[in-house]
Every structure is written in structure tokens, then in C-alpha cells.
Image 1: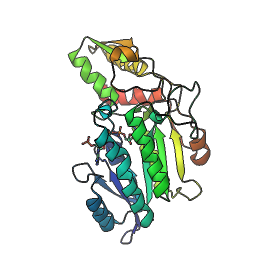
Image 2: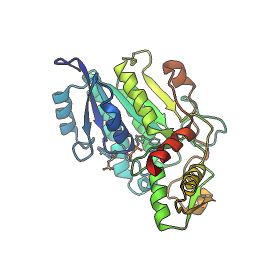
Image 3: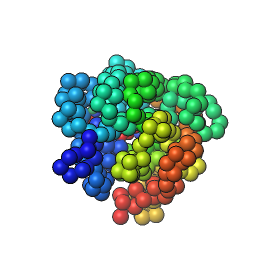
Length: 300
Ligand SMILES: NC(=O)c1ccc[n+]([C@@H]2O[C@H](COP(=O)([O-])OP(=O)(O)OC[C@H]3O[C@@H](n4cnc5c(N)ncnc54)[C@H](OP(=O)(O)O)[C@@H]3O)[C@@H](O)[C@H]2O)c1
């Protein structure tokens, strides 16, 4: 709860080594009123009920941030049991524990809970109809949290990017070292979100005590700006390297069907941000500026 020795707010972070988990780790020391405990999959598998309860009993967190998930969208089509266990079933136990111990859970879902057939931005209550197994399990996970937890925030995010080794940006840079041409999908539109932006938002939410019973719920949280494709982002990366006179692969557009993905992805998964702006006045930069900043960190 509140750490009695120093009045710090105790936060338990799950999935600490992923893209979002790593961003949370990087920023946590800036928030002096928080005592953050980071657990990677190796230290704590979220499906391990006994260990999870033991750690919760020991730390007595006021918040749990669940950045753990099975996120391999194509892999999920062949690993259904594991994906369902991590993205949905494990959340029944986590949500129940949070409810019993009055812990606020902060969880992340995805734009892939929508079919992608809508032309405009998806609002929180729009019809959910995932077209991939990953999206299906994330939607089931949302339902488990809303059913069993009392104090919860679910942020549906989209197109997460950062300077993490497994992020889209670094994957493209890595591929460029081995290939002359890289085909990148250009018929799926989303609003990419910088991981550090959601990290800062969450830490402010916790440290300024903005979590209240009247604002618990599900929020769509896209990046700020126009919707775009991963192809367009890859072109920005290519341009940055070429401008710096660094050799780079030729980025070419491709339709989803040409890339023979195992899983289907929504054609339009741009999320609407009106609810989160109204409730929290979240401040964001245009996604393009954030991509540029990440690239500057990498290139300079
Ligand atoms: N990336 C995106 O574009 C995107 C878009 C929309 C929503 N989201 C959601 O945002 C959240 C964070 O995504 P991310 O990009 O940071 O994912 P990520 O980089 O794949 O990180 C997920 C982390 O969870 C860990 N993990 C997997 N199974 C676990 C288990 N059973 N117990 C404990 N940890 C486990 C993984 O460890 P290992 O690597 O060792 O398996 C990994 O470190 C997820 O809920 C995801 O569904 C992501």
C-alpha cells in the first residue's frame, strides 16, 4: 500500500523486460514518491498463482501495472493455449487478488480487439470483433478484468514504438543490415503510440493520485496525429539514415496478403482519444515528432 517508512506508493510491475516494461523501468526513478518493484517473466511468471500471491503479500502494492502479455500476433495462431493462458486466464487470478487486496490494476489491451472495418476512429464502446487469435485473447482478458477487479484501468493502445531492442524501429534497422530491400505493410492504418508517453502518463496518474472510483474503466489511447502505416514509419527511418549518409535498405510498400502473415490484422485500427482527453487531459506530442526523437537517440 503506502510504504509506512517513507510514505512512498508501492507499485508492482509485471512483464518488466518488454517494450513497455523497459520504458517504465527507465522512468521510475524520476518519480520519487513511488517505490517500484519490477518483475520480469524470469522472476515472476504471471500464470504462477502461488508465487504471485506470495509477492503481493510481501510487497503489499497499491498498484499493479501489468505490462506482461503474449504479444506475438502471428505466433498466437499456432500457440493458442499459451496465448490464452497469458492474455486471458492469468488475469482472472490477478483481478481477483487485486479486488481482495484493494489494489488498483493498470492493464493494457489493444486496437486489435476491433475488426478494422470502421472507417473512422474506434471509440471505447464500438463493437469488438477481433480477427486474430491474439486480439480474441486480449478481449477475453479485458472481460476478466472488468468482471473480477473493482479498481481498474485498461488502456487500449496501438502501434507501440520505442528504442527497445524488439521495437519496430530497431527491427527495421536490424533488417536493413542484412537486406537490400525490405517490404513493409502499407494497407493497415493505425495511430502509433510512443511507449514513453504512456509511461509518463501512468506515473503521473499514480503519483498525483488521479485514480478515482469515478474514472476507473477502459480507455482508448492512440498516438497523437494522423493515422498511418508501418510502411510510412519505415520510410521515415530510411530517410533519417540516408540523410545521415548511412547506408540503408530500400523500403518498399506491400499489401498484407503479399507478406503472408499468419494472423489477420485490422485494416483500420485508429483509436479515438476523446474519452481519455476529457478525463485526464493527457498531453501528447505528434507521433512523428516522437519517432524523430527516438531516431535521433539511435543515430546521434
Ligand atoms: N506492441 C504493440 O504494438 C502493442 C499494441 C497494442 C497493445 N499492446 C499491448 O501493450 C502491452 C505491452 O506490450 P509490449 O509491446 O511492451 O510487449 P512486449 O515487448 O512483448 O513485452 C511483453 C513482456 O511480457 C513478458 N511475458 C510474456 N509472458 C509472460 C508471463 N507469462 N509472465 C510474465 N511475463 C510475461 C515478455 O517476456 P518474454 O519476452 O521473456 O516472453 C515480455 O517481456 C501488452 O499488453 C500488449 O498486448 C502492444
